[in-house]
Amino acid sequence: MRNVLVTGGTRGVGLAIAKKLAADGFRIFALGRRESPDLEAAIAEMPSGVMNFVPFDLAQIDLIAELVREMKAEHGPLYGLINNAALGTDGLLSNMHNSDIERLVRLNTVAPIVLTKYAVRSMMTSGSGRIVNISSIIGSTGYSGLSVYGATKASMLGFTRSLAREVGRLGVTVNAVAPGFMDTEMTAGLKEEGRVKIAARSALKRLAEVEDVAGAVSYLMSDAARNVTGTTITVDAGNTA
Ligand SMILES: NC(=O)c1ccc[n+]([C@@H]2O[C@H](COP(=O)([O-])OP(=O)(O)OC[C@H]3O[C@@H](n4cnc5c(N)ncnc54)[C@H](OP(=O)(O)O)[C@@H]3O)[C@@H](O)[C@H]2O)c1
Image 1 (cartoon, helix red, strand yellow):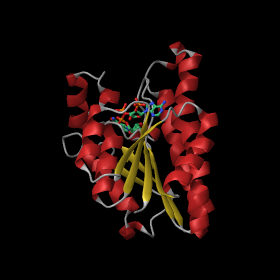
Image 2: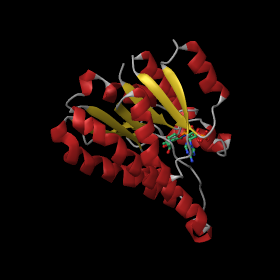
Image 3: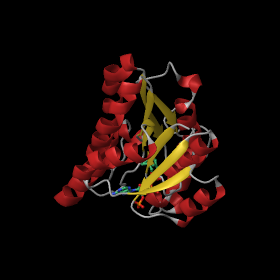
Image 4: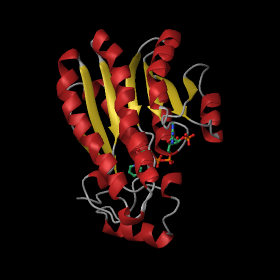
């Protein structure tokens, strides 16, 4: 079974991705700080060893190398890495604490880049591997109150394109998925009125769902996508159409 690490796999988008990829036949390592009841249930539903919880705080950048080393020693090399964990802290830039700005950049940009650095090495050695970075439509559109979050999500798009060029010759693909607004804990702060507005602005007059993002990731992880790299799939019910 091929190993795939899904960061932020304990709930929301990451859990949907973890479940879909497990159903596709991958062995999943769902990383987060706490094992949620939903992840526990998903682990119990799957045959033993298919879905696994990896307790880790990605803000601890200096421990990432050791995490990848330990995982490799215990379970073998990674075939796939889904960089999905992120913070969605909002706020007007002029009032934001510098510590909040740093926390966002650390978790949403530095952690996935450093994790990819260590994870991609064994993919390069084996001559195959898949990396999928979860960005956001906010990385290329604007949204008042999300300038720092938007900067981190745009950074993943630039990272995707250049890394795809760097590791392509070694058989590793690197792509991004840019979701629009979906109902998860990250967006729980948005009122119903805001949701209705976003849906009304979308071509399909509805919101995308976490399962739609999981479907796009499943495609990028599949053999059908072997010649797809350095690109972004937008999953937003036509919000940016
Ligand atoms: N929801 C949306 O509308 C939307 C739209 C566009 C893009 N996205 C993107 O989709 C991805 C997932 O978002 P979501 O809505 O599913 O968010 P979420 O419900 O808030 O889930 C975030 C996940 O990240 C994990 N996480 C947070 N801090 C962590 C840390 N320090 N170390 C390790 N794991 C950590 C959480 O687990 P623990 O708390 O247990 O650590 C959780 O599993 C993000 O990249 C987000 O930018 C979301």
